[in-house]
Length: 120
Image (cartoon, rainbow, N blue to C red; front, side):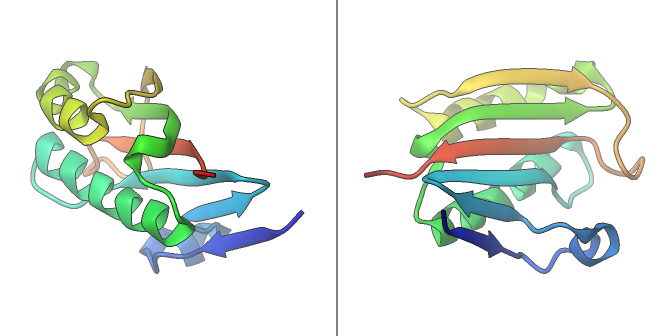
């Protein structure tokens, strides 16, 4: 099995010791990703942009995502993100889970993790 690691150069990759994504045996595992911005909607868009770049570098897209996990410190902030998420995944919605939990820094309002299957 060939394993390929994809780094986005994010500040936490070096601090924590992980990479943005790992491609292994036809799967793309994208690490939990936070975005920049003043509110949950801006951060959601930013995180999806970072994830989209990692998927693209791996040879996949949001259409190939089979599983997504959303983590938010306040579940009431999830609903404003729904239109963005529905637009991002379009006709190919993945299985999804939303978890209310603390994130690495209180300034972050959403963290998103995805798993995709490389197209054949």
